[in-house]
Length: 273
Length: 219
Image (cartoon, rainbow over all chains, first blue to last red; front, side):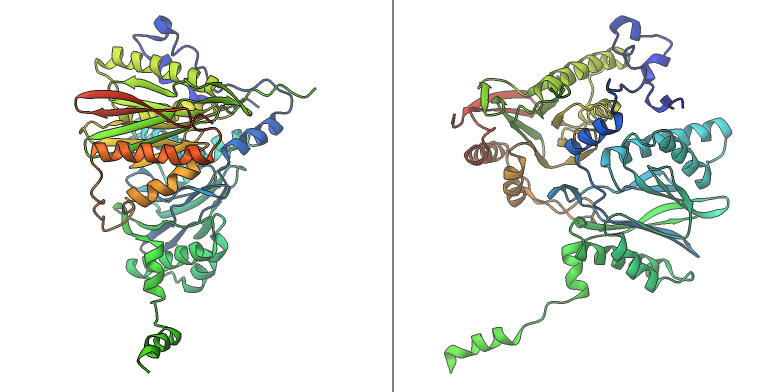
């Protein structure tokens, strides 16, 4: 099937005062370069090993009566090495829509930015904001056309449109699911445990945010590939707002305050006796 | 015989540290293939704009192609917009350039350093396919895993993701940052076979850029 490379088309080639001819710098960017080999998938697998971005992460999102809560950790790992503890995994597509990042960091960053551009173009062309269903469908269609080529994206598109709060799960295999509760990544199992137990449709924004924070914290506690800071966002009728950002190491002592152990006390008493 | 392998790892390490009004970018100058050293005098650093410097380790063939590509695009930008590219703009351009080759990547591990439009130091760190992040300091390359813990120990500041936002720790002075870079390269040279010979240190500040070369162990 014809590959949709419209996203990769260089902006230079469209300009009126065409500089592409002068330098050739714009002219040699028709789309994405493909390596000449028979085993395309095998080559992709090998080159992916060079990049080694695994779905080591925990992200979650859920709908409740006051909107959508979106939360994520901030650790990026390459195999066993922590490449960053300050990654922004919640991407602001536009002031009323958020996307989460799981899988290949570059894949998520690039395609979310591309989605933001397409959403803005839709607004300009149609004089109204795009719906969450529409935005997620655009992304899902693009990812489906790259199916089998090695992209690794597990994302949730959360937003507020005319129909109210919207949440979709979209991944690089081509899946697009509508739902009310999702968690993605290696730590998702632990996050689901806390989230499913504490979830109610009627909650205050503070309660919902606290539930999300606890769920991500517990995932970072048990999953080695998740950690750093927990960021929690709320998407309401007026757009998204960041509710909290906490370092997981410090959050631990809020939930489990340090206690003085009896053994230490004995050792302090011994010299006096 | 086996298929032709288009990649090769030439080793080496790159580091960048951002300060309040300066940025230090450094890279060693050893170029290796396997256990052999091809040259002790190869620069991994490219000046893309007057306040923007790129250091890249990995496969130097791809690094060279990438540097030329970016210089050309920077020139076209200058002609179109009548001004030089700022460091954050170049950071986005580098990310896109890397991602356009998502299915046949540049085997280059990049660190971009310079001053942003307010004159504050900025460092951007990349993976091979273009994911990037603005940080206060970063190391990439074969010696990165040896250097980052030392840099974390000296320079780590509260995460920008924290809410309420916490003030970053007072950053180092320019001369202290350069000394830290020298120390960190000396340490990595001890334990990484691909890092050594010389370190090229470029400092960018308000008055322009300044370059010095420090000798390292050659074994």
